[in-house]
Length: 146
Picture 1 (tube, rainbow, N blue to C red):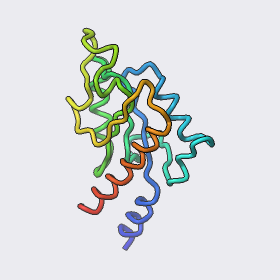
Picture 2 (tube, rainbow, N blue to C red):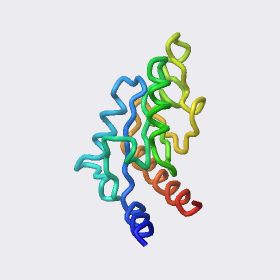
Picture 3 (cartoon, rainbow, N blue to C red):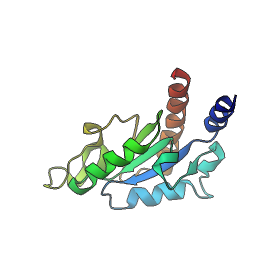
Picture 4 (spheres, rainbow, N blue to C red):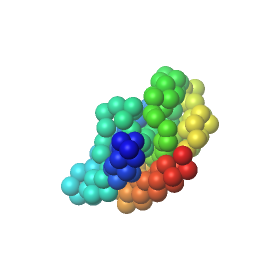
């Protein structure tokens, strides 16, 4: 009984976690702006959490550096299933201007399954909101499948 109640409440309020894997902070700033009063992503029930153990959706920014790769994998392993991974910006998708550098081990989909990719350097808030809504829908489908 309690499990069903918890599942119903979690469906209406997905929590997101932001993971910086070596970014320049452009995407990070835009993600925080998305949660502010201008774009108000919280109207969809989204809440930013400080720990991956409470997260449902993970936003990964940055080109995946040699120093951040192992830490990123450890953090993603802490996120309970079902989870949705969103690559935010051009860096985790392709490496962007850092591609080919000695310290870049990206793209992100080389290391984990990416559910949603939002391109741009940094991505526009509208594109990030669209990616967030897609991630919420994917999360609902994964929960129904369990």
